[in-house]
Each structure stands twice: as C-alpha cells, then as structure tokens.
Amino acid sequence: MILVTGATGFVGSSLVRLLLARGEVVRVLVRPGSDRRNLTGLDVDIAEGDLLKPETLKAAVAGCQGLYHVAADYRLWTRNPDQMFEANVDGSQAIIRAAADAGVWRMVYTSSVAVMGIIKGGVADEQTPVSCRDMIGVYKQSKFKAEEAVQKLIDDEGAPVVIVNPSTPIGPRDIKPTPTGRMIVEAAAGRMPAFVDTGLNIAHVDDVAAGHILAFDKGQIGERYILGGSNMELSEILSHIADLMNRKPPTLKIPHNAILPIAYIAEAWTRISGGGDPFVLVDGVKMAKKKMFFSSAKAIRELGYQARPAGDALDDAVKWFQAEGYF
Image (cartoon, rainbow, N blue to C red; front, side):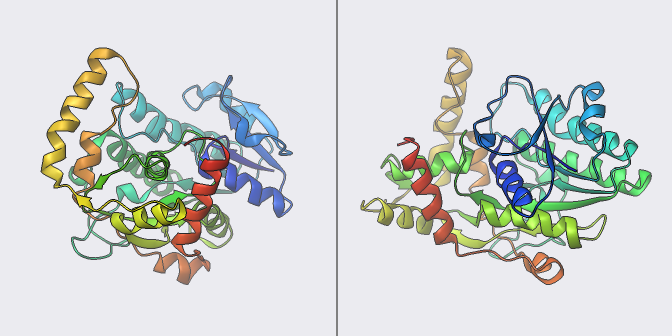
C-alpha cells in the first residue's frame, strides 16, 4: 500500500490517479472536513489525520510500503507565518518519522524549485548555490527550512527519502487555485491588461506527478531532482492564453518598482479590512524581479523524466478552468 499526503490538492490528486492507473493500492491522508472534490470517484482508502497532530499519523502509515509526502501550505501571503512553518517544516518531519517508525521502506518528499538558487540571465539546476538569505517571503523560507529538515532526517536517521523539486505545475484540478492558476484565470478572463518582465518554468501537472513515481522507482536516496518543463517569459505565457481565448495579449510592460508601492498598500488594506488575499503581493513582485528558469537535465538523465510542451499544459489548464466556471 502507498500513502499519499496532499491527495486532495493539485499535484497530489494527479499523482493518486497515476498510481491507481498502474495498479497500486492507495491510501490518502486527509484532514477532517477537507475539500475532497479531487478524490471523487477514486478507489482510495481514506485515513483522516493531521500532520500537526503526530498521534493521528500512526494509523495512516500502518501497513504502507511507500510514502509520497506532497502536502504543503502553498501560499505567497499569510496572516500567520508561524502556521506555514509548522505545516511545512514540522509536518514534514512528523510524517517522515512516523513512516520510518512503521517500516516504510521508500519515500518521496515534494519540495519546490522555490528553494533553488537562481542564475540571473541563465538557467539554474540542483547545484546552483543558494542560502536561506536568498529566500523571498514566508513560503520560500518555510520550504527551504523544510527541505533542510528532511535532508537532516536522511543524513542523521537514515530516512529512505528521495527529494523532488517541481517547478510551476499547471493543468486540470487546480481547485484553489494555486497562485499560478490564479494568474491563468485572471489572464484568460481578460483581467491582466499589463505585465512585468519575468519568467517561469512551466510543467504539466501530470508530468510532474509522473516524475514523482520515477523518483520513487529510480531516484537515489538523499538526492533531489528538478521536475520542470519549459522556460517561458511571462509575456509568452500571456500571449498563449490570449490566443486561446481569442483576445489581444497585453502589451503594457510595467516596471517592478512601480507596482511595489501598490502591493504594500494592497496588503495593508487587506490586514485592516480582514478581507481575502491582496490582489497584488509584495513578495510576488519581489520574486518577479528574477526569472525563475530551471533545468530538468538531471531528472531526464537519471530518472527518464519527460515533459510535454508548455503550450499543452496551458491549453489543459485554461480548458479545465473554463469548464469549471472559474472565469
């Protein structure tokens, strides 16, 4: 039996589908009262528990031979930074320790390229130098500390973990949506008349999920593998989406420093008003100053990882959001 955390989410639900398709018996760890739309119709064993309540994890890992720890608190803005660190760092340690104690012999931990170094004007990989000081915002900081904690469990306690670092997955079943999915929705709906000069590495969520399985099957314990796709300028991404929607792409490029004051005001107003997420984020603007371009060469070489063209991923994402009424 295989245990998957984060199975109600974006990457996790895609992973569960691929595991079932290859005949695995799958158990999923879900919080009581969680949104389980992404599990509808799937033949999975549901174990209710909470990563922050280690006493609930023993039953979830019992009888499992493998673990995919995909769950994470993925937001670029939060009113409670400590909560994000607890979920991403403490929660990761708790589930890996529980699995190791139960005799689970193979684990894959889902990190992120957010913890990787970035090369200005170039393409980064697993060896690009980086430190915690380079991490912009609570999400990146928490994921950096989480990967450090997982690596320590590997080195000090012999935890049998392979680490994967997805880039920017997009595609169907992004129900929240993720920050990138939110951008796609806004662009497809014609609500992004301008853009900043930045870039992302775009990968189809199903390819990222398949990369997890390859890491489980072929990855080296203690190693990490970037699971990415195509490096694209934001202007290219928006143009592709505009073509899909028969709209004109935005042509106004705004300097980062012109948006930053607006982001500070938006966040301050959100804190005062108690409303939802700000429409523009300080950390998001700061991150956009660097093009997050990465290479998946190591995963391709060592795991046999493959990624379809980014245009296909964008097509599937827009079609799904449109069919689900997000516009």
